[in-house]
Image (cartoon, rainbow, N blue to C red):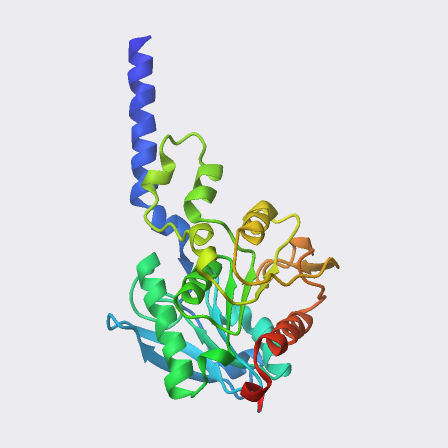
Length: 288
């Protein structure tokens, strides 16, 4: 009996050790192969490179807005690269938004390896590019965070208030989701290196909030978005009770879900939702 217990304990320790050692490989799934934006139908989008504060060379896709329109600083999810979001970017561009979409370190043509601190540095570089190179004032920036990127967007919004914070498939924190996925791992919360604790930071976000989430999302349950949505904040939350059917992820078209937080049936409609809220949030003088 004791031999069986010892073997079981040994296997458990080995499993936990593997999860801890390889957790960033489990979290981040970058794809390096990426063509120029025009290959994906994004005419007028420029493929540029910028540097983070710690010296990492980063790829970004950028395009100026139509006159008077806000610019979306886009923070993507944990898998693939910018090319998988081309349809979404097209919807934003068609609506007149400017775009700064940074490819995190290790993704696409960006150098380095991803981590929480690293992604925050990459995001700050993207915001700085929008403000210093594209000359977009902070009051005309929209932060859009997709899945993993929702935690990045919340961090950026807590640091500097944008015109709008838009979150797609947002989670409360990675450690909370890890505890849900690995309930058999004792103390799993303490093992998580990259926590992305949006729930503790959302109180410091003073921007209007737009949330998009799939009702039957199996990767990040809707309960995470509801918890974030209900968290105390000093700024009004914007939502619509109407629903739609859409895929949670452009790269996973089979995952059909019902979005309850915003009424849109395409990424063009999602862009319109961003526009509607940003027009309320951005003073008229800033839109001229």
